[in-house]
Amino acid sequence: MSSVKVVLRSDVAGLGKRGDVVEVSKGYARNFLEPRDLAFSATAGSERQAESMRRVRTIRDAKDREAATEIATRLVPRTITIVARAGEGGKLFGSVTAADVSAAVAEQAGVEIDRKLLVLDEPIKDLGTHHVQARLHADVEFPITVEVTTD
Image (cartoon, rainbow, N blue to C red; front, side):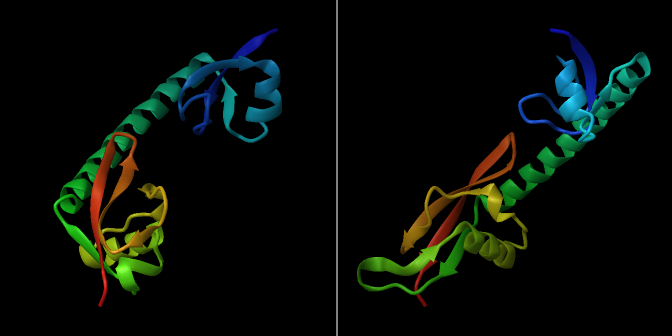
């Protein structure tokens, strides 16, 4: 089986990130990566271009990590309050979802967090204090304290 070196134009799950030079089978490169514009053949000149792509990726990654850390330092000491209707015993009518937490964080802390970055194993169905994990970056994960109360 023959293989060929390619430079990735964008991140490919299970293969590498943008700018990486990887060795793949000729068929995979010809039939999947190149038609989808995910990679191009590696030559001496393209290897220099790949190095430039990796440098840009590293700088962007550092900026993203720094921004995520700054958001974490603002949100960790705060408690986000969500008002919900509840019945006897503190059970909610409905539940509090990641989208509700995201909206409350935006309103109370002025920080936009995509609901997909909030890790909620299951929706919150009880009154009280809960911790919701936020994954803003591969290296930055922190808890957000959410207090669910009634009017």
